Image (cartoon, rainbow, N blue to C red):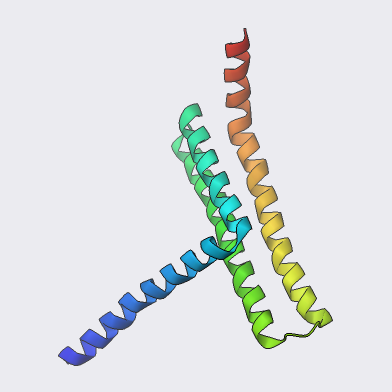
Length: 131
């Protein structure tokens, strides 16, 4: 029984190692993932400055998470398509374009949410600072 437990723990721990490898691979190799991470840092910084409520932090975290997940899935789909064929195929293009479109739509939604939550307080601070 002891050996079985050790193997399941190894599997459990190795799953985190593989996930970390995937996370780091995308950050290292995908420029857009680094752009999304920079936007995350900016949004969190602005959220601190304007003093978001708990609910606003939840919404911000959800849209940020959605963008990052979309980017990671996009990378996985692109890698899978590249693994399956090295030649141009219209369906490979559809798969890659649709995955990229998913990231774009998610990022646009996140921008709208960010503007709605951060825009008004930032505009008010700017107006007060100018006057």
